[in-house]
Image (cartoon, rainbow, N blue to C red):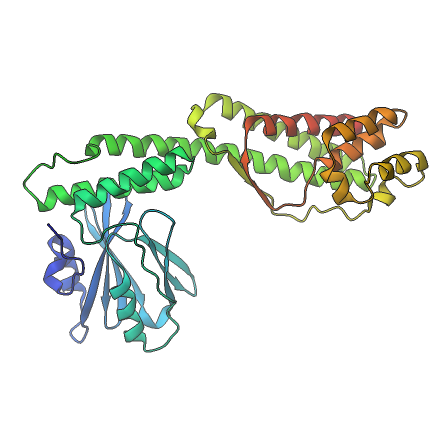
Length: 365
């Protein structure tokens, strides 16, 4: 069994969306093509309708049907964002922002129609996902989404898994609407799919909260290290304390969250430029013995210091323990980084940041 892929006639938009679209069309406005999406807001089904003048986003829910208009003259580009697995997204960009829609049917004809209507090459290039068999019935597409969701969940991509379960839920519901036969070949029941999606939504919220605290901790730690290297005291002490507190908050949330929250590791990002302005020679200026020890280990730059083995750094620290503040500062520099983001962060890495922030705080007394 195959389903009709493209809705090229107004009547194919069925139900309340057909009524809404019929009323919305102006006398001289022509309906061109429609596209069903998998996006839902408060359980509202979303469809895109292209006319000769505009793009209509029609959302039909339990209570009402609402429409949003984007004039074609305002559309700067329409592109397809194609993931490694799952369904592609249609991105409609205007001067005020970009709207993203996960599409349930191939968007090629929709985008081509926009390109023709616009008559210019400003519409983005096209690529069509082959992750799904678009000629398959909704049950088959849902089963494919369930398999992809399981794979995404196993590798720790919680957001992707949640979105794929949402696609499966929509496809199973669509199958129920278009067929009177209850399929016996479904990978999951609709209720199970819905439960998995809701569970992942909770895990996603846990991860988001933890990663926010972790990013704050990293931002504060790097800012503290940079200020510390400028021989400041109050500013780095405050930022080390903030880094310690944020890391402790992240650890608390980790311990309170389901184990699956850490699958695949956490991610963090740092916005501000926290790169050190000082050279290694400037940091150890006047400490000839320490500088010679560093050079003996091939450490002559900040980059080399940050690449050194932990055992080497520990040996240097103990060898020059008569200068604990300076060698301690070098250890903090060694454990800092200029990278804007990091992935695969586990609990032990978060705890290490807490320990380092505490060390820095004590050094600035």
